[in-house]
Length: 240
Image 1 (tube, rainbow, N blue to C red):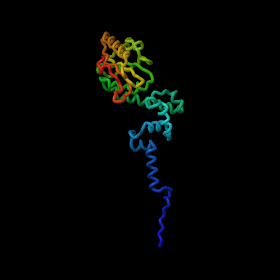
Image 2 (cartoon, rainbow, N blue to C red; image 1 turned 120 degrees about the vertical axis):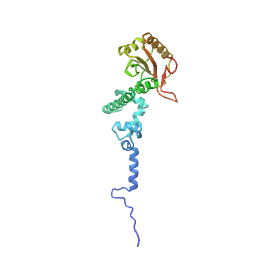
Image 3 (cartoon, rainbow, N blue to C red; image 1 turned 180 degrees about the vertical axis):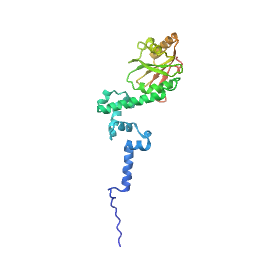
Image 4 (cartoon, rainbow, N blue to C red; image 1 turned 90 degrees about the vertical axis):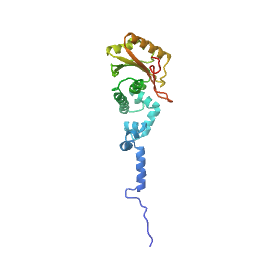
């Protein structure tokens, strides 16, 4: 008697092996499934953008990163920039999400004393790296070196003319700050201080001494690269 072996597919039209293969493919291509199973650490930048833009196609997220060069470049994009490549609702959602990420990072950090340049960098670096031009600001502190307020002084190319001591010390006086830290960014990502930065720092420090105010530091914000920290501290460098 001849035995017949059936190799017919299951009633669903797929063998158990086919089902397992398809489930595996879905796991690696579906960011929502990985988020549910493994948590947010399992998401790549493209995964996160794909979910945020509410699309099943990762090509749109990859195209955005290619268009703006990096996540930092994307964070610098304005709503008008994004509307050239995205519908208005998706563009607005992306701007809002990136802004929330910056605010959440700062909120977690400002509760501790600003007693090191690393603390200043950690709190204000994400926000200042997002600017596509130089921004000069002052971090106002109380007697416990906790944040009173961050106030932007000028935007554009930071130089001695824009960084007049009067403009920097005025908010410190208005808010009765005990001390302050001068902060500005280098959009190129290289935080190395220039001669103009050094002259400005010495001028502001001398003015603060006359007013009996503590200028704790001047921190230049950049981007970490090749073992170099993402900031330059005049105090750490012995220049203040």
